[in-house]
Amino acid sequence: MNAVGFNRYTILNLNALLSDKLLTDPQACGRLRTIAVGAGGTVYYPLEVPQLINECFQEVLETAEDVAIGDA
Image 1 (cartoon, one colour):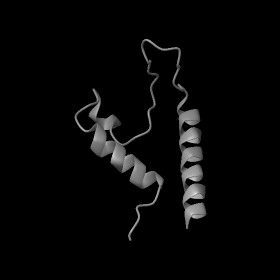
Image 2 (spheres, rainbow, N blue to C red):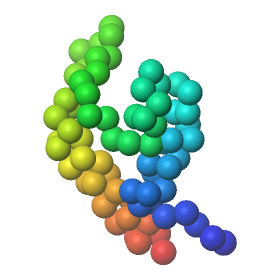
Image 3 (tube, rainbow, N blue to C red):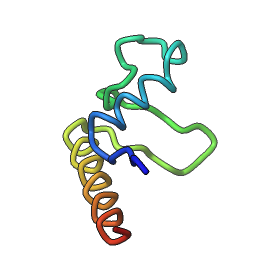
C-alpha cells in the first residue's frame, strides 16, 4: 500500500484542489491564510497573525507524523 505523507506540500496542494473557485482571491488557494477572518455566530476567534498560523500548521504536521510513525 502506498500512503500519502502528511507533509506541507501534500496538505497545501490538497487545500488548493478543494478551495479552487471558492475563495474571492484565487491566489489564496493552497496557501496558509495571511489575513484575518471571522467566524460569525460563534465565540471562536481564528488566529490572525500569519506567523502563529504557520507555527500551528507546523505543529499539526509534526503531530500527524508522530501518529503515523506510531502506527507503523
